[in-house]
Length: 469
Image (tube, rainbow, N blue to C red):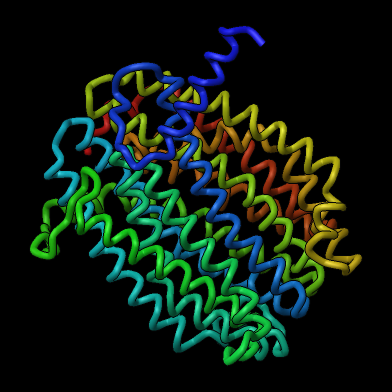
């Protein structure tokens, strides 16, 4: 091996090690490729940790019953509405914190962080009350059979009741990412995942004095894991180990900062409410084909999330780079960062799609012995994986709009592609033309391709460079 090659590997390892450290970085100068790498590595690992939550739950819960797996699918499709609000607020938090950090206004970044936490707590309390009081009704609205409701409503009740852990985990990690410290966000997910992996079998199957809670135990373990990570995040914020430092005296409502945050987040919340509510309706269509098909679809989506999350991590890197570079008055550098990130994301997603196309049946069989579950889950995996290259560029471009504070453009794109195209098309193919689940899968792929095409066209126009936050 040549000295030059050895030196390159050493430099790569050094950059990898630096990306996992808790040091915040200034990404407004220097190599863009290095900036993409330094941000993407911890963000990819963070998102992988988030997707492991889903996979671990499915692996254990699939040993309980088909109804238990279907319960997770139905509950997750509802709780994605919570994710919509959390992600919408987190996009605003990342955009504003990154912009203030780029402007060297750390006081402004601190104030934005406080307001987003206050907003997150307020929203999650409302969702908790609904989830605790009406879990059976929520599952009933989703088309669940009576036996599924009686077996699984405890899971729904606990997960929605403890949604504050989901909300704050998203929001505080968004603050860290905006400040350029993606590694702290990653380590909080490592902590919560580690606990979830240990606690899941203990609460699902029982351990010593802990009774076997079944599917309900998965919700208990997940909530404890995420809650512990939130405590860790708050300690970092209050003890001031990074740029963003919060004291108890700072926990007051600042109307001007909060209204600015709400204004930016409304587009983000709207865009994800559109996306996730369409997901709820797709799940409702899938429930027409029975618990086994629903379980196969749920497992396939969880498996795909394992690769969507790293792709989402690279997209988040693009958002931070756009925000910080616009704050520093460097829009051309911001745009170049997006195309470089998009290329890397596309390469990753094409490789993954080939794996899914070839090994879909084998992958699904790891999670369920049921023939019909594996059959429809594998079909879902193969059809949707065929459009992964569109997901790659679509995710990066959409997140780049959000990183610039232009959350309205992705909202319009989502409205057209999800509500005006995906839902009617899925219903017509699956129900009217009686194609069944395949109709839903095709609608998902075509909608994501449309998002990528429209997003790239609008991004090239460059109006996002003029947005003020």
